[in-house]
Image 1 (cartoon, one colour):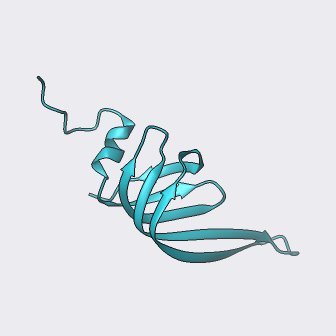
Image 2 (cartoon, rainbow, N blue to C red; image 1 turned 135 degrees about the vertical axis):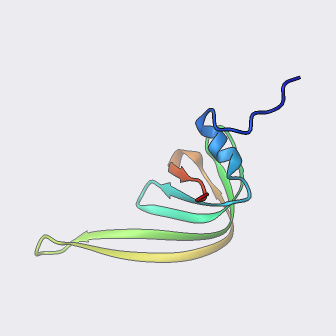
Length: 93
């Protein structure tokens, strides 16, 4: 029986190697999460702990300039539906 590969051969390998590590997850609707990845599945549903969520609220002012307001909140544990996930960034090496 061959030994499991330790390198990166497909995108899910990066996710597998990031379990129990802090990751950045970008979501639809100008939201991003930073937290510890505990579990995932093939639909990119994620279970994360110690999560900080940042919500970016972009408004156009009357002068035509963009105004960005950020809101932050924290959660001890979070389930993220995979259909809202745009990007998962593994921890820096």
